[in-house]
Amino acid sequence: MREYPMGKVMNSLRLALTGAASGLGIAAILGFIGRREFARRMTYVAERLGRI
Image (tube, rainbow, N blue to C red; front, side, top):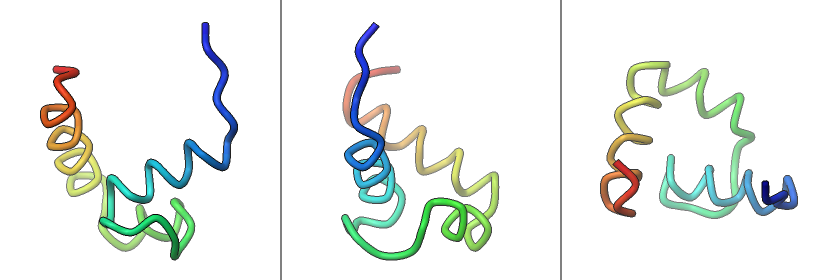
């Protein structure tokens, strides 16, 4: 199993969710956009990266 630095994971996740590599914390973003929108965006990113 690979281990990635938390900072890089969070920046990548933030980029996938908002289109920006810096800004609000992930918890704040999730609170703002909600669970369904979060899931929709993650599905979109996964499809574009060829993971689903």
